[in-house]
Length: 155
Image (cartoon, rainbow, N blue to C red):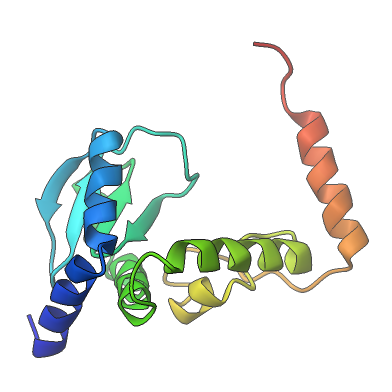
C-alpha cells in the first residue's frame, strides 16, 4: 500500500465510515475478506437494499456476488474511488449527499447514476453504468409511474 492509501485506511476508520460499512456487512450476513490497497470485500451480502452489483461504505465494498466479482480491475478502481470520496467528505456525510446526487440524476435523466456527481467522479464506465442524456422532467415522471404500474401486485 502507498502512504496515501494508508492515510485513507486510517482516515476512513477514524471517520467511522469503514466501521459503518462493516456493520452493514454484518447485518447483511456477508463474508469479509481483505482486498488490495486497504480495501475490504464483504461478499454474499443478503439484504435487498441497495439494488446494486456492489456498493462502498468507507473502505468496505459490499456485494451480493462472490469474491471473483472484483476480479474486474475497472470495477475495483470505481469502488476504490468511492472510498476516497468517503475520506474527502469526512465519512458518513457522504451517504445523504450521495442520495441527493441520486435524486438529481434521476430527475434529469431517469437514471440514478448518469448525472450523480459521485458516480461520475468514480467513472461511470468503470462502474458498469451507461450515461443517459438529460431529458424533460415530464418524460422522467412518466417513466417512473409506468414502472410503478408494471410491478406485480399482491403479497
